[in-house]
Amino acid sequence: MAMEVLHVMTPAEWGQPIDVEAKWIDFVDDNVKAKLPPGAEIDGICPHGASYWTRTAEISTRMADGTSPSFFLKVSQGDTGWGMVSGEYASMKALYKVLPQFVPIPVGCGTYASNPNVNFFICELIKMTDNIPEIQAFTKTLAELHKKGISPTGKFGFDVPTYKGTIPQYTAWHDTWEESFHHSLKWFVQAEEKSQGPDEEMRELCNGIFDKVIPRLLRPLETGGRQIQPRLIHGDIWAGNASMNVDTNLPVIYDGACLYAHSEMEMAAWRPIRHLIGRQYMKAYFNHFPMSAPEEDQDDRNLLYYL
Image (cartoon, one colour):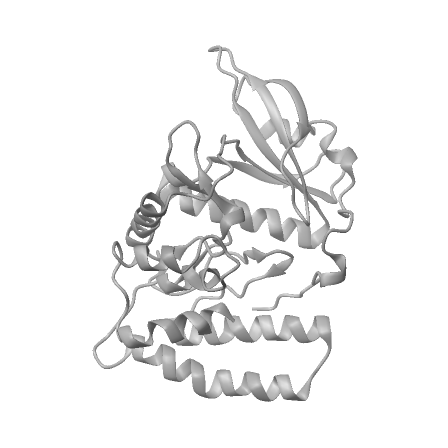
């Protein structure tokens, strides 16, 4: 897959002003209006939420039936920005199709009529708590997503590149998970080298991962009579992308970076102590979705995915 990493954010840039000017969420662009439900009358727009790479806002509307739905708008710029919002829209559509109660309703994406360099993603705005999702309800619902979300091609990958921040994931289709993960990790290694410069010790360590660790830990999943099915994963679940719906008291996830992958890949970010959605969630998850065989390799697989 020929993809170019146009920008990799460095630690020095975190917390700095967003490239997207605030003026792009001061009004509702005509192309955004066109994505809203027919008959929606706009009451207003105001900043809502926060993001390192985009501007985000709430659009308040009124409908003829007397309801007043709000929508969440995310605005980005340039080619990378388009990849981010189009990948998120494709992700949220896939998640919504499988388990609609688990995600906000995706409404659309596009470019501004007033400036073709400005891109947007829009979805239902859900009132959420400030707390992380309740552990049993969340892990049971996530397991349901993985059980129902089977790859339409029977392969590992996704229809479009989906983004981790400003970096596109490798999403080309592959028959085996070992092959898919190998190429995916290599892609991120290449992005890191482009951002930080080459380092011979790092290359040697990475070669060991590709030549020894990945075959040792992932090949047994699909050999010796064992197999795994490619499952739809959100791809970036942590405390900042998961909450509880105030109105339904059900868990909700957003900011999808989807992939049809080994289901355990979903727990890649649950390993470090600093993450509020952590090992206790992993333990609860396996009560609802069985651990892949060989079970004794699960912790090592999780460490590999965490890379």
